[in-house]
Length: 251
Image (cartoon, rainbow, N blue to C red; front, side, top):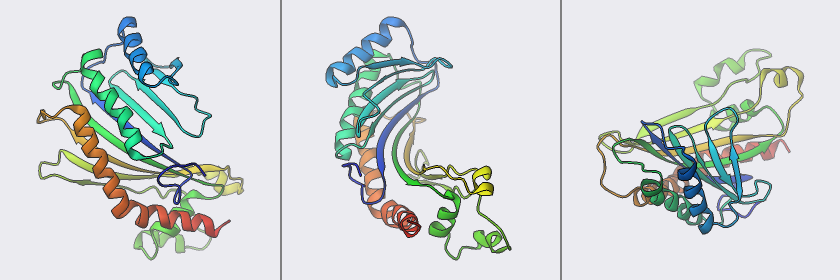
């Protein structure tokens, strides 16, 4: 078990930032290298520079085999960064805030082109069995939505709830919970399961239609604080805990 704030409930925890643009982001050699080199000075272990062969995506990463690591990526229309298994949420937010503080100056990103800003809290729970059965058992107890499982011989093959709510009157601030399972029909049919992960994502998103004046890094910090509050109030006790308990009952 890694040393991270939610180790009681999950095997891995990560905080990601995603900034979406309505226009293509700059991918010139000098711009890319200057941006990544500046970030590397702040985090010297960010040394692995990569280009995705199938797309115009460039990334700078720490060693992904380490228990905790950071990464950042520049895609065609999106700037992203992540911290896997940070010691605290605040530790992850510091890196993301630096990336967002650099974005207007080093990448020329303007408030006019921004589409949205995300903070994503991700939780991975390892389970070598039917993921969808675990979700049906833990999140849908006595729900009419599980009525089909009452049929003789029925087996769960797709239980991946996704729920979105607006957190502001103008609906520009939203929160979403996604539960992602990775069991396929072949595994259910044969009983040959891999030790893959069930992922729970909490995403707080701010759409940029009203062109807020607050700096990106300051807004992200507030969004991360809201996400942490939602985790403590709802996600841990009502989603992660039941899933974790259902997995433990099969061990």
